[in-house]
Amino acid sequence: MARWEPGARERLVVAAVDLFAEQGYDATTVAQIAERAGVTKSTFFRHFPDKRELLVAGQETLSRLLAEGIADAPADASPLEAVANGLRRAATAMGPMNRELAPRLKAAVAASTELQERDALKSVGLAAAMTAALTARGLPDATAALASELGVLAFKRGYFAWSESDRGDDDPAEFLVAALEELRAASASLD
Image (cartoon, rainbow, N blue to C red; front, side, top):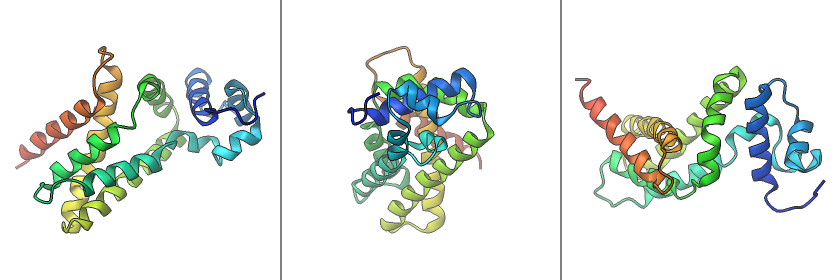
């Protein structure tokens, strides 16, 4: 087995998602994930503290990109325009592997209560990063929190719409921003 081979983290994520989809989260062991990825168990633990954390691989990067995009939005941008800017920035980190894994990941999460809980914590973390960036722009807490929650929902809806699209050359940012616009319109109809 390769010890320091490049791409181990990505291979571990792919192996885990495949195994979760094939045999379920509970039946999948760290040893099986490491073997499928072609690495040792110690390499697994250098990248992840446990198998549950594979679900949130890249969360720190995603949170940072969302916050940076919000911070870089024009000063006169509305809260949702700033969130859209964050979504566009986050889309820059989404590549073919994200697109390929999305349906299997969605199925694995749907089949496991533990993964659903971890996914919910990921959403909380993303919302917190966006809320902090929006409050740093001077928005009241309630406005920042609401815009952030819409941003998380738009990210999830747009990400899965992008992953299910049959066009191979489409930009994930289009899907994320379209989902945000759809949610903006839906929220306007709540009055």
